Image (tube, rainbow over all chains, first blue to last red; front, side):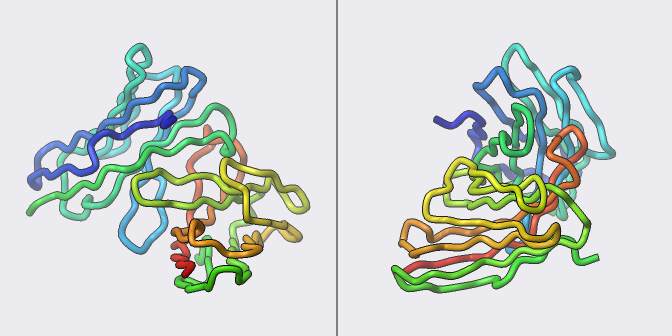
Length: 112
Length: 115
């Protein structure tokens, strides 16, 4: 049972436009959400996170939105750059890293 | 800064062989963990440690052993390799068990093939 779902395996966006990556979850006990970015042949890198007590968190070009009632979160990248081309993993925690569940990832391609 | 270092980067094993995947971190992090990543699936937690001498099982621990004799090192042992253990393995560390204090740092991964 996949508790964290990233239903779009891939996404292509033109450079300069907005990239929106989506993530849905089923476990209402999740209280913290993280996004990781992964380049080929490298390990994931922490990107941004959000607590369940907030509905938005921004860090530069990256903004994460959380809709608790819909059990949905999204990552917005504005403007998108070719260097943003990577696989993005959504992850959710129910308390502690041993309770972090990862989604399957979305491969973003930013076209110059 | 080296961060989290995994060795080897690639390995091919025959069914039934044993081996140890090495993981070392130089950030003095208390919390370390091992994940595997398979096609179409997210990263799944194998084992984790909240400090030297303390380890526990994650979501998919069968066929793997770990130990944590020092803060820096967290090796993962495959006892008798099986084709189902073909995967990419990631080691991660963080200063705390609490994700509210930031994300984890991951190594570059070990791609293991069992034939």
